Image (cartoon, rainbow, N blue to C red; front, side):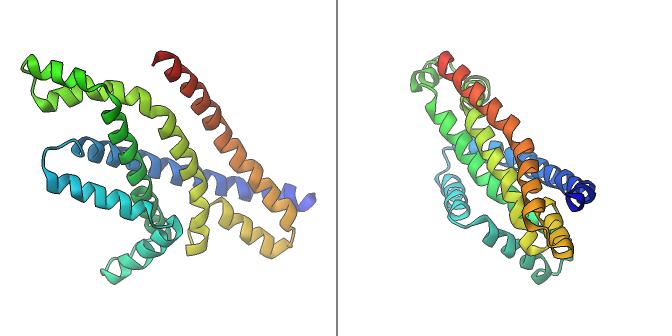
Length: 214
């Protein structure tokens, strides 16, 4: 127990790093997903095909493999970046694919009659998407967005394998020094629970609200 108490400040620093890494990947990934999700409604077939290729390729690769790719890709291209940056780029690409699919699915779920009615009024397609489809899509996409965000928080733990320092990496360092495996990783489990549980509750509440609305 003394080892655990002494290690808590160090683990807490790792937890802060985990939260920061997750926030970065979620924020940038959401922006990427929103842009690509909107572009997926384009009439340009080649653009839609490229977006589909990105989604299926990224979702078909384990996030750990994607981290290894970005970790070694930057040096191969002549860029020296930290392991933190390489891992965050991988998380952004990974989350962006899921968020893109969420946005696209939410846009397609809006009744087709609304688009046809807007066209009959002479509204341009771009404004139809932005003013009519997107506000409704945002409401229905919030619950799956939160679920994906929870997965991204937990996915940060893979970065420890490629040298990204965060909560899991910090725990490994403490365990190597103290051999208190059960106590340390028990604390790590609680840290992840404290981070993810509020998001789980929020997701469940929003799912019920959107179900009532629909």
